[in-house]
Image (tube, rainbow, N blue to C red; front, side, top):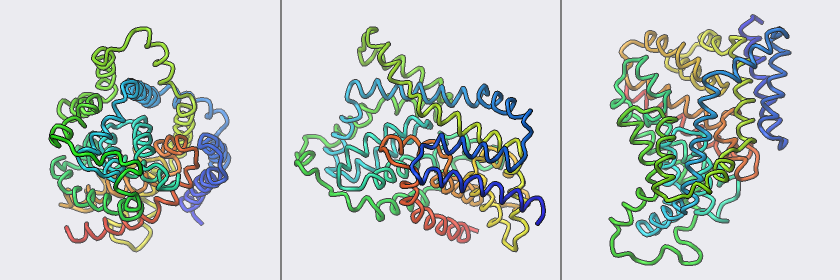
Length: 407
């Protein structure tokens, strides 16, 4: 067995360990820690190099940025919760559609427009209240994660989409339009598997009353979600960084929502969630060890050994690269290669590769958003992934069919 094959087996062993640790009910930061130790042993990372890898990861701009965005968006969530804005937006949805299924799906999609891990907590609160006891807890975890991430599949609010567009020369408008059929498929799959089992009406009759103006209620949805809406507009229309945009809106919301300065200390403390921050740090350290070994960059060479069409090879590289936490490395290193290997592939190839990355992240053991959701519902990530896997496998098959039709 050659060196690349051995490296792939070592990588697989690390992720099997993560899944086993999560499966027995331990928190994901323990899984990341154990997998990091295993990676050090299997890849024979020099002991002298370990402190440097950890320090460079912990004090990197990426780490500071992720923690900063997480904290600021969580603070914005606290501001909205303090004025019951999230609940009010659900009431508005009820008054427009009279349908709990809409609450449980559309609201997380809207929240998912915000590219932040903290948005998962907002979506979880909405789903929990909308679904009640009509789905199991793991199913509520699936609904939260799945519909919260539909926006991530196609909106250029997310940096990976913007970067890929620049690297491959595909206009974002073409990509977004090309993704719309797959976005519709995602919604239908989630609906058919789980959402259709949620009763449309509330058991206590809430939302059944008629309103004078559905247009007014519809507009009030966005009024009650205005901090999120304005942040997304700032990102999309003015290309403002999400951290800067969220910080500006937090300051504005503090005054617009008429909070007192005496409220500030308590809210600042409540926005800090040490458990999730530790999880983010541990997972990024694990990714740092994998990056040091170079194993992620060996994925293209590994899959090229198989007698498969080029688009299938690159789709597999995208899937397993993202699944292994190397999405950024794959994005920068493989995008130019993929579009050079498949000339004139244009937006159909970008749609396929992006969809594979998206699908992979919905079942990736290092996906921080699902760690947040699992923590919110007090379940393991493995319980959520069991619900995700059938839906994602069907979606992958649809993606390949869609690409072959396009080309």
